[in-house]
Image (cartoon, each protein chain N blue to C red):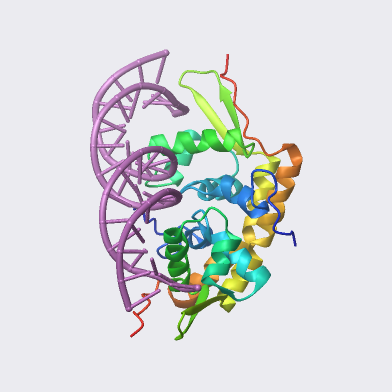
Length: 121
Length: 121
DNA sequence: CAGTATCCTTCCTGATACTG
DNA sequence: CAGTATCAGGAAGGATACTG
């Protein structure tokens, strides 16, 4: 991997942040937990149509390791596990807001379709 | 904030934006062009140590198609091609700023290392 | 100089089946 | 209910040689 020395192990802050939010589901989970508060595993799964169980659990674990998500286990039968945002998760979500607005603007602008660049003549 | 209604093909704005910035190099190129202004192909390559020619050109083309980057060709020998940000590119970079700050804070916080979550006993 | 073309490897992602 | 295990397919990313 190309570790360029600029800001420690990262090129700069954007790299560190992207590293943590990139992936298909992370920003969505962040948003889901922020919007709806603490959620159980099954609730999350339901709120994220199309996600596979593997991806859901894998993504949650990564986010937990990154300190964005807190996982609370209740030892019951049947099991109950609740996920919530840590304060870092909350702040990250806040930092994501302008980007979300930009995305919405982009969608409204032209339907956000990717344009085919014509070959130069 | 927006409701969880799918906005067209996207979940919501964040998805549309992530779609455009995700990838290993896009945010870096954005930052490079914003910081240093118009850059030639070779200059960009130099400023992004570790990127392969394939990735550089591929990423630039995608960003051009997404309306973030403008490509200006000067028909000379040897060839000269200059890349610059469009206004959308600039605004995206601005929208990325809080995320960058978050990333820098994260780095300073603990070295930003990903923590191993111990197995529950 | 500014790319193309090719090949190769690794990472992502999802489906499915099974367990405490 | 909340996971784990396994497998497979495709996409993303990279090294290198070549060209107008």
